[in-house]
Length: 95
Image (cartoon, rainbow, N blue to C red; front, side, top):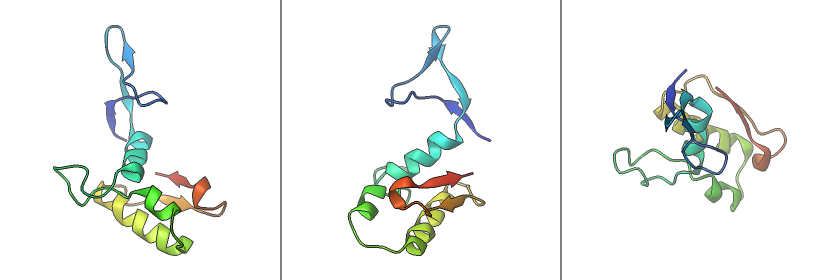
């Protein structure tokens, strides 16, 4: 489990007692990986899945899972379970 500064549902920072709110952030990290385009993070140019690119094109669920698993492995999530049984739009990831 990783701890980091937390963000709210709208992406804004959360505060508690006049300071940044911190806590378990694995799900937040996975969402970041999903949304980031490759090359968006200057420190880690290979990081980023760019999920919007996959929704706009024809791809099999196994190809989608493979590519996502590679990106999650880059960030240390080696045992992630990816469920696309309800379609890519209703993705479920267990870390």
